[in-house]
Image (cartoon, helix red, strand yellow):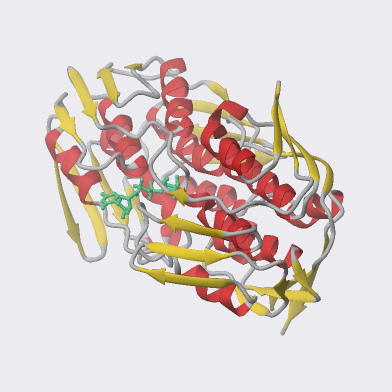
Length: 419
Ligand code: UD1
């Protein structure tokens, strides 16, 4: 049985919503537990499908994993297994983040490739070339990335693009390598800083987290720790954009507003009053949003994960918006679904031009990934009638308690099963 959402448009969102830990952080922190023998505890874990899936990957590697409420306890053996097979990793791409820790801990890793993704091809060349510079031979063989190192040593590594995943894998391999590693043009996302903080709590020597240069002094051994995941800035911003689109008044809690500097500025340009608060922010939009241009870029640029929400906002804004996607090649597939909802949108390569219309028109639409799914629900909130959003398992992978949270803000949404 698959499920879909029925979203009734026309409601103004109002109230308060709390976000959990960041999906893009928790999975890497769970992988980092492989680096130390013993029990690592990660708290503030979001209630999303990817967390139990990651637990399965770790169990397959010999860890004992207990999940309870928002806490995960991972007990890593003295000698973890080094083979993450296809059955374990096929369901989600982030599982590739076990590669770096396995190379560090076992000096070898075999990690099945999870395959293509609806947002564009996602090669691992930067992960591999970084690991090679650290002394790990790495090839793709029979659908797996295979890495082996006799001697893992420090190196100077300059990434051609500040890839989040490559930065994380190289970092997690380098913490147990001999000598100093410098990663230049490293990703600067808050989730990378979260990982650096946890690694340092475990006894690693990492400096420069949040800047373009990470310096790592390798150590012989790490110890388990307890670490709280940072709040999910993408989920938080989704609710902020929803407030703006529906001319609502929403207070978002559980996130550091500084992680959303540019995003909140864009909402201000759209005409919202945005107030930073101690553990979040508040968005109040009184008039119809104004058109805003967005260009996605690595942090601190506008996040590609919020591009569908930006398109949703642009679709009902007054005026014409230009949206440029610089990170993932196929992310504009989502625009086809928006056109189905009556958006006046046109794409050319990695640019989209959106002429705002006063109201969208409900239709059946299909989610192609987590963020596209959330973007379609937001569009449904400003469409006349009832919008059917299909393939919502994507949304469940990234948004904890999505229906409850949206209803809590006054949205009308129903989860319906289909045979
Ligand atoms: C992570 C996030 C994802 C977010 C993305 C960019 C997780 C689980 N996912 O994905 O939500 O949208 O960062 O902020 O944290 N690339 C290469 N070769 C490589 C690695 C990447 O060409 O070896 C390219 C990718 O195809 C893409 C770009 O670099 O075009 C950015 O990818 P990357 O930053 O690595 O994203 P992920 O870590 O996969």
